[in-house]
Length: 472
Ligand code: AMP
Ligand code: ZN
Image 1: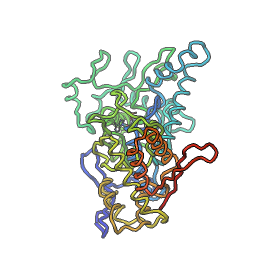
Image 2 (image 1 turned 180 degrees about the vertical axis):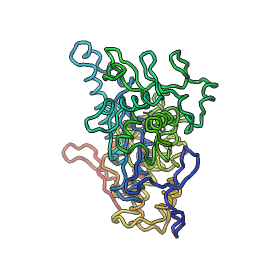
Image 3 (image 1 turned 90 degrees about the horizontal axis):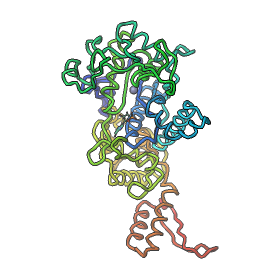
Image 4 (image 1 turned 30 degrees about the horizontal axis):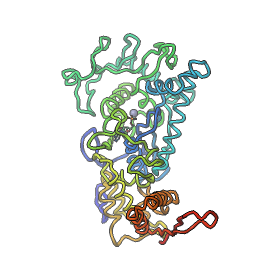
């Protein structure tokens, strides 16, 4: 696949965090290309930073399906529904019911996780993301399963049996010193970690970098029976179990945000390789850059976040709602490995671009995708080149539509009535305040998008009403 053809296509190339190099992608089995991406911990609304990996890996999923065929790609994205943050949330939201004996903690946890997972699905669907092939939930992979798929307890047992894990004061810990090349992904060799000793030193750990595979639960905490007592899994082990359950011991691509490289992915690799005795867990490790606000990573802990839900449904960011396609395109206008500064200006830029394409594509059916687009995307998802090509004057309407479709953007939809209704309501507010300049600005902005407003009176009530017509 290394020969360039006329369109510049030389096969899929991806930047691999394991080698820090752009490499030719060669699947283990072209009839079943396998990708795992770490999914959300479901205790609260996902913020728009969390949406970035979902969108980026959705584009890669679509590209893999294009290159290898829809039936030949397996994409697994898990749901983390066991976590101490979830327990805390359940106690906060349902404390009174639990205390009164109307609800057990487990039922309260289930309510939190189901509601949050439903919200997540709604949010990412609005952002144009396909559901993954399989979406396993961690709680279903703690104990050995009837279907014989990999589970966390069996994996931990293998690690103990092979001399890679030990029990100490109510925990089972991974013994980092038992793995000579621990730290390969994050390029943090073990001795360096110990010298730096950034990781808290606990007396019961043999080495400061050793991490929890299993911890005992108090009677009030959720737990599962295990050979080491009633307890719950550490964070990292779930992905080792669920990836093995659906993708096998070694698979093609593993993805997530930059912040997961260490410790999460490093520890997934340690667990999976040591439990299975393999040289690698996945061949290609891909990481997206951060979505930032004023130069800082958007995160719950910093409090500088906007949930996907509030951007879609409320007017908290820039005084208006933002359609899912606008959020999606804004996310794709920057290369996936670079940081993005999230701003109203960025979203407006995406919206203007989308409108321009929609006008050009209006009324046309989707055509054949040109190979130059596939080549651009295949070059480590070169979004900049991709969108430059979409802006080319001689691209046909049907070609434009096909190109948009490959990255999950539907140009068929006109601005929805809801969006227009929003503008109209704001304009009426300005009219009431006699702020004619702002009112006219909104009218002209809509006109530029092909939407003509018509002012009139409600024949029934005599109230001022505005209707609109799409002119394109
Ligand atoms: P978390 O719920 O924090 O485990 O994050 C879920 C996913 O979102 C992970 O892949 C993170 O790397 C990713 N993520 C979290 N915050 C950001 C951000 N500000 N920008 C990009 N990705 C992020
Ligand atoms: Zn993971």
